[in-house]
Length: 337
Image (spheres, rainbow, N blue to C red):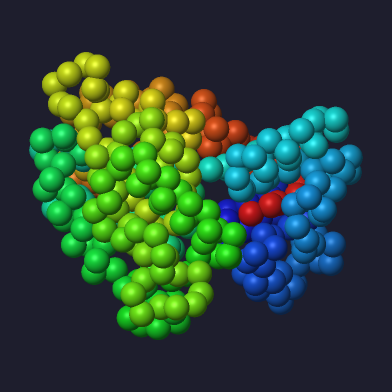
């Protein structure tokens, strides 16, 4: 629902008509949104909902000459296909693609608090969020301490029916996604990452459904598959960095792991002026990520959102659809959350 409203609201405000194609795996929120639009009295034809899969309906939308702009959220592979299909009609395309977001814990941070909150954020929605902080960067000298806290937090996570008040981690969206997560976890083990908690298979006591064990890997290297590929499941990679060495600068450790940058967070005890001079801030201003969050002990939360100009593959867009819809009013937009 969040993805749909973020796209549809500014498009409607700009006076454009909309064709929405929801994910074929999770279409119910789109149906509810369509019902809300209808009950609100939006004129017929302004908002249009079309169900179907990507190769069928999605490809037809991207290539349709009557559609002035396409906004797509999904995998990098699918995003490339959308861009190629849209190219002959020279329509505008905005994309929100795969993410491998970093949670950077600096030496002056409250390590236990930072790790606990990082694990919880990673496991939220069973890790099925493009901005989930799935890479945790920790000083090498504190790796053992961070791993112990992450293990406690992962083992405390309750996996089960999301309708249950006791469950904090629900199932994955499909069998295909379940199998993908299992394969990537096994790859992590094979490539030498230290399995701190969880692992392959279903949680104890659960024999069916697409439930997977909340998992933490430590000692992860930047060249490992699990450090570079979006897993889209409750799997955290803890990556060590060395302080005081230019070759192991935190921003370098962040940027060299892969092509994705959706959301990054820094946990520290510094004040904002110090943050602005930090290596992590330099990493942000080099446009390696889309959202940059700073957590401070006194509960000051600073989240910066810039026009999306990330050089990496997560976003190929501008942050505001209002800006993008400098198209003439009544232009037709296709939204693909």
